[in-house]
Image (cartoon, rainbow, N blue to C red; front, side, top):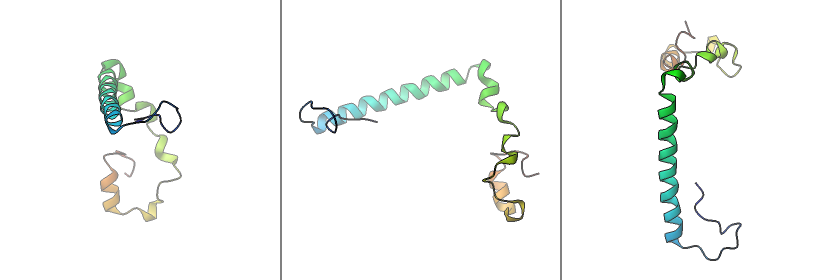
Length: 88
């Protein structure tokens, strides 16, 4: 969150009060933005997108996942919520 412009804009001195005011406004904007995104995603028309149905099966060939011999039962259990059925 940008709080002041003194690093690039010749607008004069920046005070702590200015920075804190901008930070507060930015935090409120971020809160409203996240709320609006969540409100939009909660609509029924976005249900399949939220469930990431378009990505089903896409991780099967991910190169960054540990090879089968290196997967402990404990690690598989921890990741099962994120990749249901992947390790079966």
